[in-house]
Amino acid sequence: DHDYGMKIIQAHQASFKKSPRVVEGGVVQFLDDDPKNPGWFLGIDGDGTRGYFPKSWFKVDTAAATALRDYDASELSVAEGKECTLIEECGAWARITCEEGTGWIPFSCLKK
Image 1 (cartoon, rainbow, N blue to C red):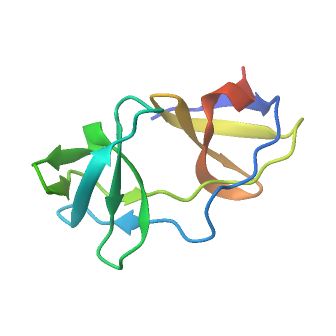
Image 2: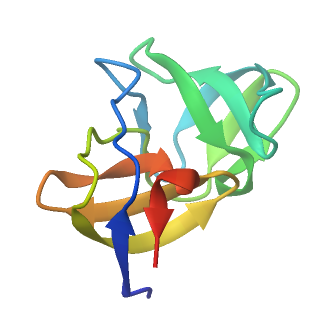
């Protein structure tokens, strides 16, 4: 359980209007490894939403990946200078919570 007080040092705008979600035990279609983000893959959730998934949170086969835990790919749009709490890191991405909500932003946008 993390409770790291962090500051947003660079604004971030969410890339997608709709983000994939999957509950533990749910299956997503595995498309390809993400060449820009090691440890992540491109997939499609059960509702047909394309997006990126952290490999360590899934049991990946050739064409399918089973969620080992709940995953919500929602990105946050945040302004520079805001305070937030780091929940967890995965590769170059950080899951945070702040007044805008809970979601993912590039780790490079954060500073302790």
